[in-house]
Length: 473
View 1: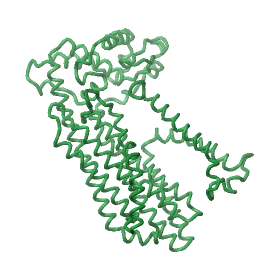
View 2: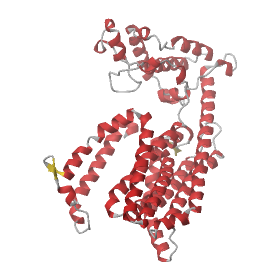
View 3: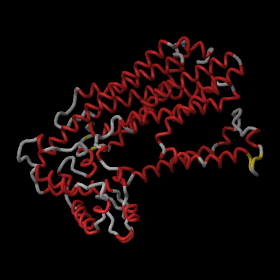
View 4: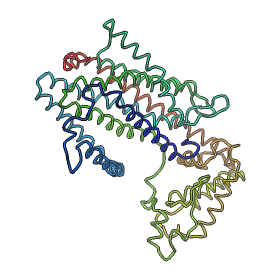
């Protein structure tokens, strides 16, 4: 849905699915009336501001939506905020456990240790939706009998393996428990990290089978990677949730579970930082701060030129929505794409293309020079013609690919005199693809070795951690 019609529809469909899940759960809640402690406790029925406490908390929790949005915008402070909250929750858990006695104190210390381990596991696992999907898009051969699987569809492998192996793991734990061979909680986490690390190292094996013409690795690389990540997840995820309910005293079970999910939040934040290490290469430092000035903002500062509704607005090639409030970087990207498109179709020499590209490059300091309506109309007409071009007959020739591959600029010094743009671009794509594959493989190798190292340390510390758990398995 996202690939074909737009990702807003993909996310919308996922939201509908989540609401259906909630309604199904709500509709079947009476089937669980016999389960102890499932009803709203007395504290939740106390009146607060004219409503019951649980109703007040539900409504107040909606405030998390604008707060979360604000924190996303202020991403720089989020890391410090997470660190502070994590330290506070860890302190609260240990001090609350201490009030219940030495055994509960030890268990809370063990829980905090496992929360840190959980952060490590999930910050690596959650590369699935970021760096691993980009890796699949750029450096994995996804052709299956003539059909090319969209990169986003590689996310299918994890749920597929969850469903395939879920029952098998349940049976395995029961069997091992029956014969007294069920691993302890720290060992299960260690095994999970071991498989997670091995999954990343599959990319090193896949590199040995790369296609030299495209610098892509076989699809099986990503299949086996996700298979090992999923089996690792099955060692960690259900075990972790069960562990929290067993380790925490009833009085603070809610806080303990909140702390456990806080570790997921920290992990996702750190996972994003790791994913940034594998992002597209570019030279943002040489671009002036005005680069993100939008058309609306520019016209507000230069009112004598008109207003937004007076202008013909640019849109992304192939997009159906209009108008677009384009910023300077986007405008320049469309302009460079149109020049490249024309040069590629007309089979220009590389030197001619580079000269035309340089001449059209925006001066980001001079916003007023950008606001020339006749240039906007001219560019829009040219972009309309790019949509009429059958680009399918050329590989890697679309707007998204152009932006990715030309982030690392071509230079005529790298090629022989008189070389055609088509030939130079083909060589350039291969060069960028090789650099990308080398970068991904090296980073994934480091992540894999790191995960395995933590798994070994955890295995060596299993006995003292087990003693802190006081019999919880």
